[in-house]
Image (tube, rainbow, N blue to C red):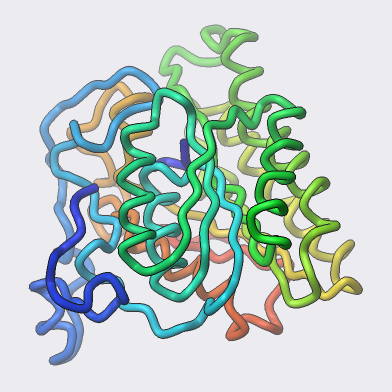
Length: 320
C-alpha cells in the first residue's frame, strides 16, 4: 500500500532495460511537453473502491512508467527494500529502480497480491530480482521479519524506501475520526517507518540511503485528512532529525513530498474522484511515473551531497 497513490509493460524492444519510449516521447525530444496536458486532466469518472484499492479498476489507468521510463545504470547492483510497492508510487519506484539496475524486495498487503504480481513482472522483465512480501508494517514483529528477509536475500540494504501509507477522508471533521482509524493511520505511516529505519540501519552500508514519502499535506493540511496530514508533518521532522543522526555513518536520509497523485488510494479513501488534482496549479494530479525520478535521484550517487532534504513534487503548490 502506498502514499496517495497502472497499466501493462510495453513489448517495445528494449523497454525492459529502459530503452523503450512512450508514443509521446518524440515531442519531448523536440523540446519538451506541456506539463499541464502531458497526462489526463480532470474531470474523471466518479469511482469508488473498498480500501486498499486496486489498480485495474481505475479510469483512467495510472501510468507507472511502463512505456516511458528509461534507465541509465544509476543504481547498478544496489539492493532496495521498499514498502507499498504493489501499486501507485511504490510500483513506479520499483520499476524505475529495476531499470536503473537495482534488485527490489517490496511489501504489500495480502489483499494486494494481484497488484504485487504485476510489480514483480515489471521488475523481472527489467532483468532484476523482485521479491514480494506480504507484510503489515503496523506490526513490529512483521517489520523485524521483513528486514531479516531482505538481509537474507541480499546480504545488505542499500536503499530503504518508506512509502506505505494509509488515509481515510472524514469530511465531517475530527468527531468522525475513530480511534480505530487514528491507530491505523499513525501505525501505518509512523510506527512502520520508525521500526524499519531502526532495524535496517545496521544493515545499510556507508553510501546507502533512506527515502521517506511525506506529502504536501505536511505543510498544507486538508481538514478532512487531519490525522493523515499530522503523520506527514511528523515524517518531515523525523527525516531531518534522522539525517543528522546518521551523517557520520555515511547514510543519507531524505524525503519526497508529493502533491495529488493518481493511485488506488484515491478512489478507495476519498469521496469525490471527479475533480481530484484540479486544485494543483498544473490543473491535474501527477501520475506515479512522475514521482519515481525523484526517488531514483535521491538514491543515486548524483545526490551524494544531499541529506535532510524534502524534495517537493506538488504540481506547483509552493512549500517551505
